[in-house]
Image (tube, helix red, strand yellow):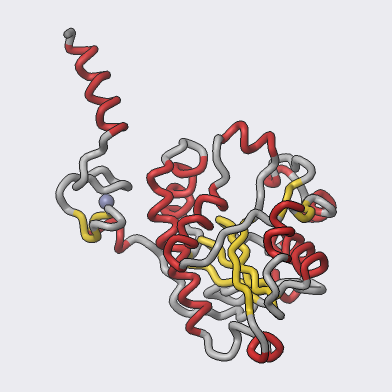
Length: 256
Ligand SMILES: [Zn+2]
Ligand SMILES: [Zn+2]
């Protein structure tokens, strides 16, 4: 085999069977801090965990004008695992746009951190109504359009939701459809973005049947997304879930 070919074959093998002791982020060998996550100590220490929640609605670690501006929140609150800093932007880009799906475990683990923040907040997890009767808790996720799904091959929010479902033993049910494709948000003004979001989401009928056949008095939905930016996506999705299913919706997002 020529040197060049050997190099290519080694590259493909490394992709298919990455070494067990390689850090998923920086690729350093033999310095893993956590075997489950496969991250080294340096990469672990760079994760900007949200440790002090300042905005009680969206879970941000600093003062927040987005929540003050919103007229009505259809979700009870959102909690996120990490601040969306440059390191996290890079991490998400690798996962989302370059198809590094092994990072899904890392992202799911981080999302579980947000779930634990939410669960640790006493008295706010369920309303009084929910405490009185039986409760059905499920996980769902923000859908992507069919076109985006084909481009990317997976929905990162769904993958994270499934990872969270595995860790919490809660069922993951697709409950929403994205009925139209919105263009890249970054090129638009705030009001154009808001107009775009109107009627983008609707209920997923198959998922709805699955949920409605259980007879709990209260339906609690954990709605998963990767990044919480202004809360507009979360609010539009929560509105559908609340109005069509009468659900109490909590947001769980990887980054804020
Ligand atoms: Zn590392
Ligand atoms: Zn907020």
